[in-house]
Amino acid sequence: MNAAQDLALKSHLKALKLPTVLREYARTAADAAKEAMGYEAYLERLLAAEIGDREARSFARLLKLARLPAKKTLAEFDFKALPDLEPLTVHRLAECEFVLKAENVLLVGSAGTGKTHLATAIAVEACRRKHSVRFFTVSQLVETLLEARSERSLGRLRAALKKVDLLVLDEPTVALDADSRRLTWAAIRARADAGAAVLLTTHLLEEAEALADRVVLLAGGRIVADAAPRTIKARIAEQRISCRSDLALDQVAQLPAVIAATSSEGRCIVRTAHAERTLAAWLARDPNLEDLEIARASLEEALAQLLQKEAA
Image (cartoon, rainbow, N blue to C red; front, side, top):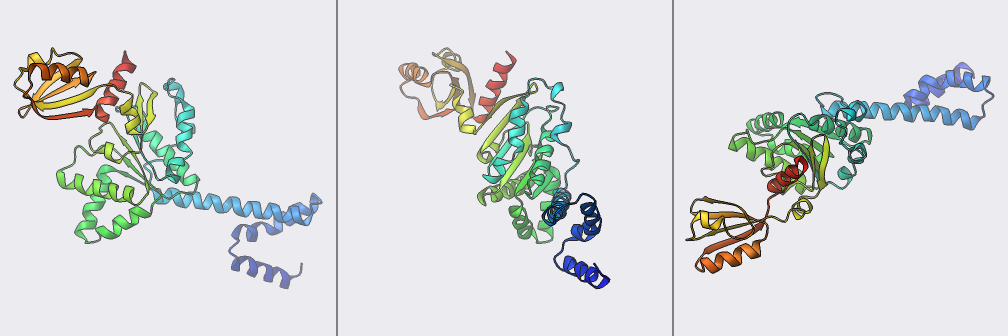
């Protein structure tokens, strides 16, 4: 190749934005000559190098935009320290199918169960799969939202968050004041309504039930539950009866199938293993009870029971 051809080739590669081919074509040509490599094999090697570098640059860019607290990976997660944690389930979650389906996932567990490490590792895998990610602690998100509101750019921020494929939120929101909680959950629900995925780590379930499509409960280094909230609640037979009754609380507590009985603001609230049996006996003793409400156990109660069973 003469100088004019070499100059023209470099100009073409720059115009086509093929920096790796531009950097490697001469060295690869020399290697190809030594290995008696055909034109097709030479071209394939150059293009493979270009694609590899392009994917690496894209991955690095997405990681930078994600603003992760650290680059944690599943390879670094000490599964041996938590022998009951099923690696296969964790790796399936890290395949990020829930991102493609725009599902919301909660990682629920007490402090020290590895929720933040797993959330960060899943975020890294999402970047590797070319999904855009944004990581916030809840306090960071609140600060960002409040700052945007003061600068009258809250709408633009919410619009930007909607465009991210996966929003990762670490820490519960219970410690926030009412205004901060409202801002945070408005941003989360706006994403959910727009069909975008949220991954939330928490040890609290207030408001989360309305958000989650999928809940992963970690306890004792083991995944105790990994399902939709309604599926988890269906595993628990317990129901709650709430009403106004003239029957004394200690008498209510002795009704058939009653697990616990409490009172609040003039209402009697009963947890029962069999609502029909409890209610039939209750009506027989107090036919004038009113304002009756019957509901399945809440997600928080269901998860608490699963944890009790796990500890037993």
